[in-house]
Image 1 (cartoon, rainbow, N blue to C red):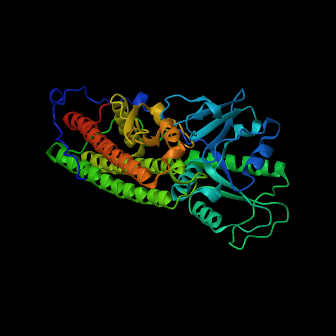
Image 2 (spheres, rainbow, N blue to C red):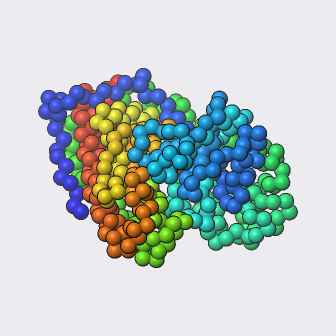
Image 3 (cartoon, rainbow, N blue to C red):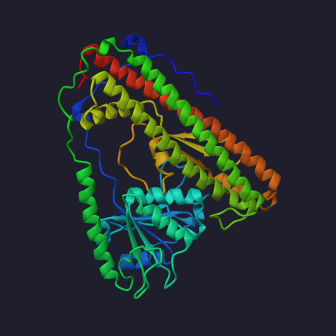
Length: 457
């Protein structure tokens, strides 16, 4: 699909028809670190989680594809986060129309003061989309604790996952039973599962080191966070507004094109699952297994869409600030500008969930809280310039496909094609909307900076 036409940046406040974006240094707070978490995967992960929790266990049983996030709390309680809901609800499997993306369990366990724990789905059921989701959680949490299955060597899928984690900044713990042999893949054997106290100490030690590493990578005060920032001496002679328009237009087109290709691949994988009567990662077959597989694909698509948009927006911000300021901006300056743009975006209600309905249509739910319900492991850290965006399946979809008379292959393929076409139209329109917003907000901010000779603070 072609890129949407992006209008020119107007130079006067009256022409913009909106108040100028003011940089207020006192409102630019330090960017918080992602909360640390240990992701527990592999067979026996549930038993290990209960053992680590000790008297606080056992943890509740959640659906096969749901992430269980165990975090500190003064009182015990479990909450379900489900696509389509703006607020979590008490976790009651019988009351849920569809499986939640995550269940958050709060426990007053001292170990949780150091890090949260995330119980991952069964690795043997993960397809490409599910693996991407797991790697995202591990990357943000900081550690993967893979539980070896007795004396058996790692499977090919397990070796691939461990190798991919080892290539990131995350820490890999390969926990094994007592006297387990060294794995032929060459991965180091970590804490002994027969000594839970030793394992707890090893994880607490990691959490302390990880917290120091994150603090050094993200200090609370960075250069340029305060003070006057002047623009380039000849900034008013530059054609920066035309360049901003070109950058936003090309970024929108490129992101839309890549997401369109990915949606075509999603369609192919889901059709293969329908025709083959089995969807990887789902215990249900044919049409009954379609919601699980498609929701997982939409979850992975959401991560890709966010990464594509955020990466492009960051590049636009860096290039335009470098041009107008005449030098590469300090990190503090960049954060001040990003914070001002985020405040402007918050007033436009760009945070949005695209929800596939039982008819194959797509409904829209606005609000950051609604998007937060889609995450497998939610974080409050504010880093991205753009508001969040996500895609998921409504509970009505699961109810619709649970009926035995809807297992017809041709019906399932038709519904799938209609749903993905609706997602394509809405998702690509949202991408265009976001880059239009980047152009307007950043253009207004830079216009004021050039007019006054400084970034306003």
